[in-house]
Length: 343
Image (cartoon, rainbow, N blue to C red; front, side, top):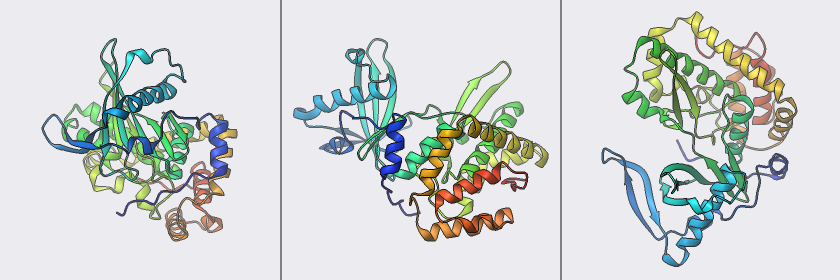
């Protein structure tokens, strides 16, 4: 797949972001981090290449950049309270070699207890911003982020990357395996309903919470730049990516169609409840996205055709933009004739 074209954040979306305190003045911009002069390959615990590079800056500007990163972290995680800056330190800055927006990952350490956290500095992309907003409005979890000009700051989402999880964590009790498969069904439904694409195993994490009996599992997206962008319906259904086959086969083993349908209906009901609770904000965002150009006419027409065929309807014919398609799909999701994405 070709790298996605970066879509600019236009004035109506920026006004929405300012209104909801997402746009702030940042201490540094993406371009400031891009002035590094040396890199080394970052390897994992097994000595394998992670496709990230640890970067280094010239001594004359290193201190200023690292201090600005600590201030950025305070804006993101502490509401701008700078009183704890003396305890924060940047342990490492990494640069991703394969991401659409070439992100930087910042590792922050609290010197009082050596606890660490991460956040990301990326180039602004409208699809990603819409995806992050919809994650807050329609999903069980939200992801904190800030923008300033062409720079996007995003918090780290804790969890085990899907591809690593499938290699090491699937050999569990049948009870936990059923819970894993159930949560994937809900994740699959959530992505399809809101048209979040490209959820291959490395684009989401699994958050594991120990419970009274067994564990609870939550699938969480970590990349949002394919929100309402591609034209193929299957692109918005994680079940169709071969990277997700291990959890798909587990679901086939442990669940029948009736159970799958129940979990889909549960997730759809939760999405409907979230839409009602955040009605004004959801309505404002959908109006903006419907008037925005966040994909190509060709991709939009292809998705209209695919969704008409999938749902056996003609109602998507009235859509002009990807935002229109999203609105129509959300409305359809709350109606009984919404066709199942698994079965």
